[in-house]
Image (cartoon, rainbow over all chains, first blue to last red; front, side):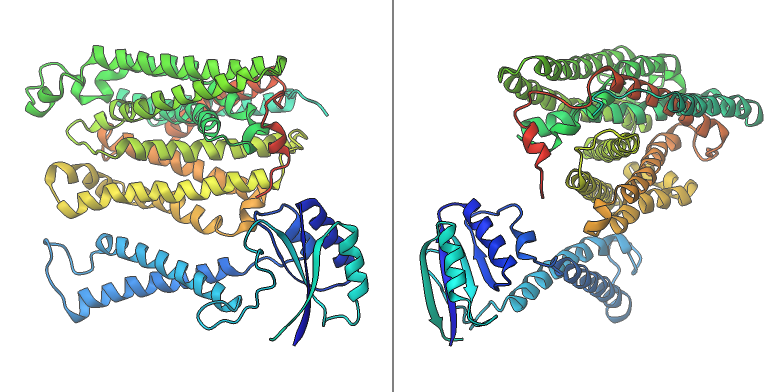
Amino acid sequence: MRRYISAYFENEENLLRAAKDLKEKQVSIQDVLTPFPIHGLDSILGFKRSNIPTVGFISGAIGCILAFGFQAWAFIVDYPLFIGGKPHFAIPSFIPITFELTVLFASFGMVFAFLIRSKLGPGANNPIHDERITDDRFMIIIDLDEGGNQDEMVKEILAKEEAQEIKVKEIEK
Amino acid sequence: MEDKYTLKRKTQYGILSIAGVGILLLILGYFIESPNRQELWANVLINNLYFLFIALFGGVFLALHKIAYAGWYTALKRIPEALTKFLPISAVLMFLIYFGMHDLYHWSHEGLHDPILEGKAAYLNVPFFFARMAFYFLGWIGLTYLLRKNTLDQDLNPDLKYHKRGKILAALFMVFFAITSSTMSWDWIMSIDAHWFSTLFGWFIFIGMFVCGIATIILLIAFLKAQGYLEYINKEHIHDMGKYLFAFSIFWMYLWFSQYLLIWYSHIPEETAYFAPRLKDHTVLFFTVLIINFLFPFLALMTRDSKRNLKWLSFVAIIVLIGHWLNIYMLVIPGTIGNEAQIGLVEIGFAALYLGGFLYVVLASLTKTPLLVKNDPLLKESFHYET
């Protein structure tokens, strides 16, 4: 069992100030959920830059080499056919498929890397903190088990920034 | 904060020396290489087109962002506006082609007895060629003049009507440009190889123009920032320009390959006649163009940091600009001079002379107006831009 505080705000300015205050007091913010992207939130939460582009590059490169290599192998070694009077190793005709597979591998690589890294996908158990977090609320979720007894302090900060419905929840993990 | 750019003595000398070196190389090249009329006219055409494309892209950049309701570009609007100031000079230079028609365009010869060209004579004839040229320039110069005048009026008057009028003008320019950019490329470039045709040629030329224009704007931003102007242009704006350069370099290759693949596959002599001399006589240049216009920017601008680093981005922009000059060279030369063509003193001289003139016109027109627009409703969005 882990204990969480969830609180929602009416607007993003209060949420930004609350998040800043909480971060300064070393409170661990589990997540912030907003209906639209908020400028400056990432830097306040101290998110590191995502490595997804690197995953995309590597999986794209794998797709590129695989596609080109397979076509070259199939048309030269395994089953050489004369097609339209072209040489067996006809590079231009390999390019569209190489391109498509590069894109396919890169996008699939990134999607699955994202799913695995964020613990999403089939069978994932992600607790829902509030029914309306995917709706129109600016929600902040705080993990209370990290960093000792901070309940009162957290509640105080949230209340100061006019947070609505400050809820403490115990969720099975 | 200085709001107007002043053309410093040092810069003037720099531009003058570029043009001077150009003239010197031309004179030297004229005596050493003794180029024939065809080579001279081909060089005039290459540089005419190259700098016309960059100037014309200024108008495209403005119109494109205006009708897309973009806000981020507002703070750097004056740079594309300055680029369009070169258009009238481009017009004069293009009309000079009248004296070189015979050397450049095979179809303009009298009494050809060529059934294919006789079939195309309704479109490809000299009077109509120049009538179209006049029509294009009238539209481009007129509409870019109105676009520029509209923002200058807006500087003096905070009325929202200028913003709305700008959108109408931008839409008009886009429609006019969409049609004329295709027909212009058929007229001036594709008709050099008058027997050959390609339906996506216009887009291919347009995307080349897009890359050149973006690279030029990047270099002008870097130049002005180095002189201490444009402090409000931050990494986010640079990042977007880098994305443009990256994305359109890929798209340029996409269109190049789309054209090549179909011709390679079908292997019809009248179509392969276009690529055969390019591949056979200019093999090195043929592949160099592909490497520095696609492979290099593709790998060099892949990461986020490289797009946000103005120095690196400027370096890539210079390479890409050279690459696109070579691309236009490859479009023009095989049909005019043929296999004995070489890049020598004359080619470099012409390019340097044009570059000097182009830089002078653009930088001089930047001094005329404040570098930052006023009263644009989207200006604030441009300052707070964040990706």
